[in-house]
Length: 293
Figure 1 (spheres, rainbow, N blue to C red):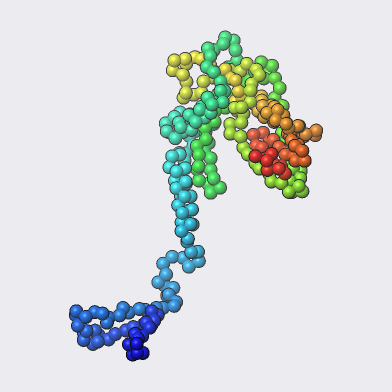
Figure 2 (figure 1 turned 60 degrees about the vertical axis):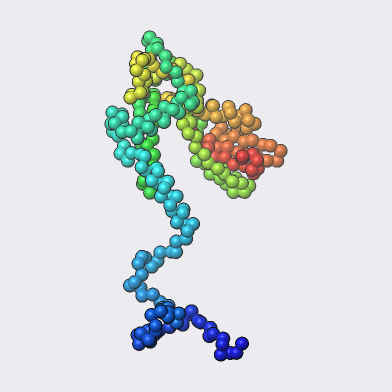
């Protein structure tokens, strides 16, 4: 093949322009020779840019992450009430707050907190009260309607409704010391919050409470609840929860600290795990991942 027969290499970056006269000379049926015009400009005019110049390039992965965050936020905010009711009467007019109160009572059933019994004559029956609060995130957005049923512990009678109320609480110095030990031994610490912790504490005394407002049994409106577990607001609730938790840990090989009763330690061969209790918040960690799990 001769050099004349070899077609020239087409550079896609070369701008091809044709005059109008040349275009008119081309036959209507012959368009094979027409080449598209390409216009390339290195710097796009700033005034033609739509959007913020400092904004980073958005990748597909970031788009998906933003979509998931938005979907989760919409799911959390579309089915909650942003208004805190002033009283139970107002809450019972809002379907979202009714759902929140029902969720609280479901926890009572799961933990076997009480049983409905006839009102005993001459017995001190403690009142109950709904605490209705909105839970917010760091941005101030309402994420949850929290309803908590508490006992009016100020009506309890010492010696009848409760005996011991003292419950040890971890001091700030003890927590700082635990953090220092974790840094020294280079092990991870984890924090957890026990949901409805006080509902797990067993009540030793015979305690009765009124039925919660808005959820009174239609068949037995005069009945009261006899408590098996502690309610928030009871004077002995923190102690009952502490005893329930420590008994569980002691039965699983932990020992109390000699100085701090809120610190429990478990030793297995050359490994150690520590648990620090602060009411219903627990900090734990250890050198062995096996013990932590």
